[in-house]
Image (cartoon, rainbow, N blue to C red):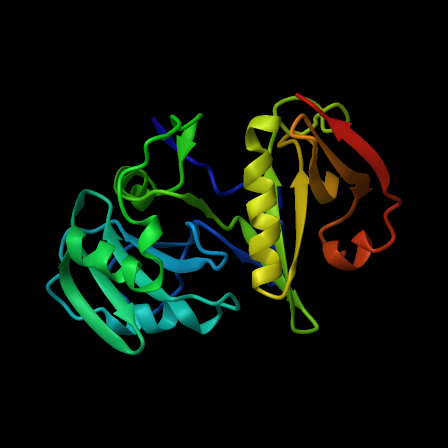
Length: 264
């Protein structure tokens, strides 16, 4: 199974436009720990609230040296309500590191990680009875561990931007078919609904962007996704072209939206 590709023309554009993009290396010139990838995952159980975790995935094997500065750095530009930072090692998911409320723990067991999650929402800890197979790829090593040890809803944040103190969370879809004909799948409906709820929880808003890797600068935009009678999704859709010099969120304000239905 392959990892989810997190670098293409749109994610590169967003990263260069002061947007936060998941799965990118954490930049720290003082670090000698090799590549450290950073993602944000959010969880929802029986409670109406969400648990948010910043995940650092280390590619090296040594974890004998203090890394607290990296964990502090991981939170500096996070504008979402992160509960704690979790360090994972790509080739070893038997022990972890936790940075929570200014305290750093090394060589933490899986049980200790689950205890930390339970401090925020005990209903997300445990094995899921309705675990769906990963469709095509996984986000990071923690993605696999969490699927085996946690339940409820969980997903990662693709990207977000902060404009006038308001968070704009972006769900990025990269279909192989043309974006003109592409519509969201009903199988993913609750992913959209939960991300919409999570965006409101963060006092922000959600936008879904579909794009083709072969057509840089062209996107399809989806907003206000709703499930209708459990059988189809209803949402606003619009199309936009832009150049690397233009601000995507500013130009998005001028897009003409129309109602579209999907029951795929």
